[in-house]
Image (cartoon, rainbow, N blue to C red; front, side, top):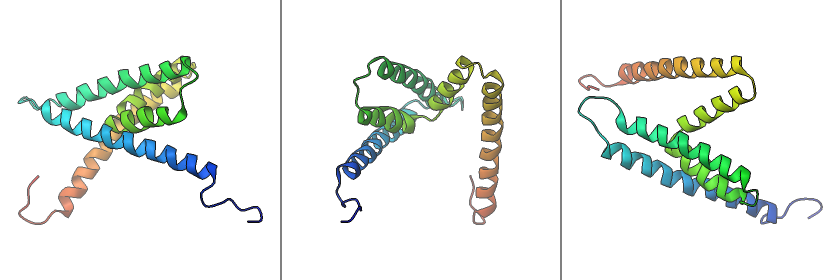
Length: 144
């Protein structure tokens, strides 16, 4: 093989295993988010399902990452399955919240506030732009 890695070297198998962990966690996180979001519909228009999912995700990711930091023996595949895969697809707001707290904790108040404001402003702006692009590209007679 003269220096080339074998097609199924142990390093490649580990990377494939990690990818599978993220995929499986992501699948179950996305399905859970959908199911809970459908179950928690309100008549008021307030996105209660999404709101509660995001709050649960914030708590879960904060707890999980702290837990695995304390317990140093947890395999990286478990972190990828639960943290990156499940919670990551269940909600991305949990990651945003934890990263903000870490910035504050590191004394980077300016970057934390910048992150909060830019995430909210650009998130809403891009949602609006996406809505407008979709409306612009719709066929005549179609409604939202």
